[in-house]
Image 1: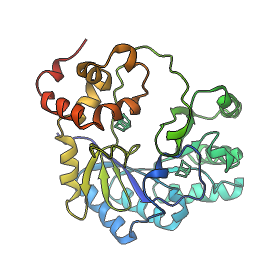
Image 2: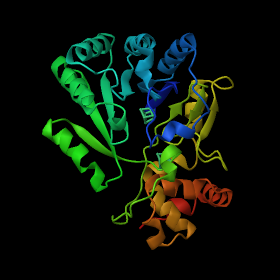
Image 3: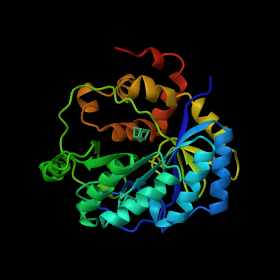
Image 4: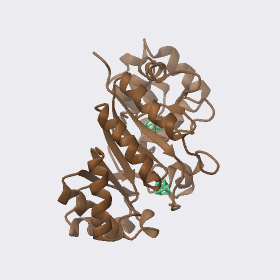
Amino acid sequence: MNPVRQIAFGYSTQCNIRCGHCVAADASPGTVKMDFDRAQDIIQEMARCHVTGISFTAGEPLLFFDDICKLIQRCRENGIYSRIVTNAYWAKTREHTDRVVSELRSNGLAQLRLSYSRWHQQHINRENIVHAALSCQKQGLDYFISFVTDFSKKDDSFEQFLRDHHLKFFPEPVIYFGRAGEFDRQRLFTDYRPNVCSMNPYLSPQLDMFACCDAANRFSKTRFLYLGNLRNDNIDTLFRKMETHVLYPLIRTMGLTNMASYLGFKAREIVQYRKCELCEKLFNTKENLNILTKSARSDLINWRR
Ligand code: SF4
Ligand code: SF4
């Protein structure tokens, strides 16, 4: 059976706003865009390699509206589920929003993901999110609102706004990478959770592929998440590299907490880290990475509660 293959597709890093928490902020200097014809070819190649879902992300994809419409058409023609992640800057009026959503839907878009947070909403009127969500509801396009939060009281009114409008949303924890790397962290109050991660791969406009879309250029000391570049390898090779890696499947199944425990991290230390911070502690250190790699198929896999 073929493994499930889905990917975040970074067509361009260009964004029209500058959110204070953006993880993409330190990914590359300036903005980069993929060549349009190359992007079309890549989607065809992904289809041949059994990719079943593509999420257009990176900067703000809808700055390249016509190109993205054509790319989601390519997805539809090839039976690939498509999603666009957008800050909804374009949803200024109900009428215009209806036109945009209608066009996305008629080109074959399967889902719109609306980014919302107290950082996004310093630049984008939150009514835009309501326009976009209501238009999706009206036109039968699946959507959800990704409510990025640090779980502080400052976000209560933002959450209440979504509740007042009866909108479907999911809280997403801030990832303390990129610009958010400098933020003060609230203390965590949770139990000893496994910190399992599904690991969604990411293709950058420069054609670099990473095993994780939230930390593309992180892990600079070990390049743990870097898979390669499409100029040197084909899509299938890079997916296979991900699927046959000794540690990635363990991140998805046994979780980071067990791996940290195996390395000797104290339980009281482990509970202080958020998931991605713990991931960085484990895999952006050559010493830890060597130990985990060597033991991946023996002692480590049996390190369970
Ligand atoms: S978080 Fe999204 S909308 Fe905000 S600056 Fe980054 S890419 Fe743009
Ligand atoms: S836990 Fe690791 S692999 Fe998962 S999103 Fe965070 S940095 Fe990426």
